[in-house]
Amino acid sequence: MDATAPRWIEWTARAASLTALPSGVWRVALGFGVPVGFSGDLADLYRPGWPLTPYVIVLSLLTESLAMLTMGLVRPWGEVVPSWIPWLGGRRVPPLAAVVPASLGALAVTAITLLGAVSWTAPDAMGDPDAPHGLAGAVMTACYAPLLAWGPLLAVVTTAYYLRRTRGTRPTEATA
Image (cartoon, rainbow, N blue to C red; front, side, top):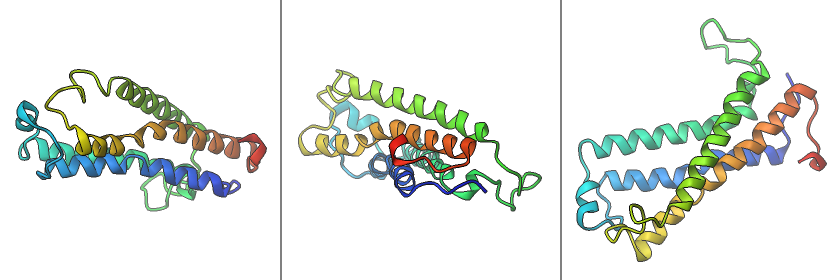
């Protein structure tokens, strides 16, 4: 097995994996009818039930699952396929099989969240008079803001994984 990831990279991976959690909790709360500040037409649009509630639950679980995959870049299962997986168990994970999707994910998440941040106050987003304002708007913003860190954190962890797997040594603090 390759060298273990430095402690700071493990913490970076943990942070990346948790960036999606606040927005997921906020969405699930919305889906279960917790008043999150929408009014008027948007309150009607975001009323709990079918299809909103299952949609926000599935979206939140999918998003958090994708964020948690970052941990594979610092755990043994990101280097050797777990033995319980049929036909592949015990085989080494080729570095590029993890680096390419992780890099594309980091780029995609960074682009999507930056676009969301730039358009956050647009008239069809938080600029809508029926969107959450005041404390509710601040809470919503605070829940979505950590997503801005997901892409860059994933990129750092992916780079460290690549260096560790291809050079076989731990990246030093100077290379970070």
